[in-house]
Length: 128
Image (cartoon, rainbow, N blue to C red; front, side, top):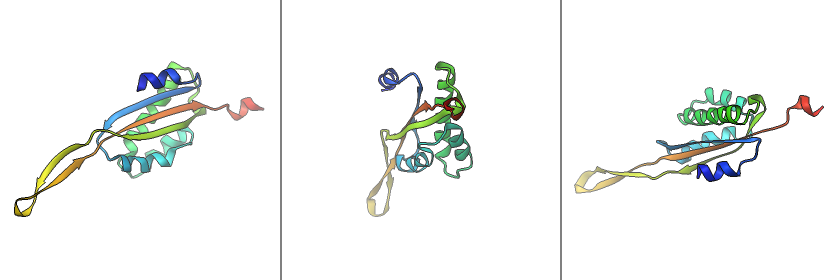
């Protein structure tokens, strides 16, 4: 999917993804919703002070997207905005935990994939 998406990106966009994060997609989406649509630098600062466990992998993938934009596309990191960020469910690992009376309870270990597209916006100084 990364190759398909990378070929469809515009010149002012960069992409990064991380796969098989060992957290529930529902919990990661709570953190992703905090930074959607923000400037990338502000989003990284906000995630640094967020007390959720999912803030660390989300900040790493945003930092990777910013690095891809600056190194590969020569974009200014201060002008980058998180245009799209989404979380997909990864395969669920299933175990069983034994319970009373000879039964067992399923234990679901959920995982997720995080994808980010950052795009450059025209800075306010160049618009004047």
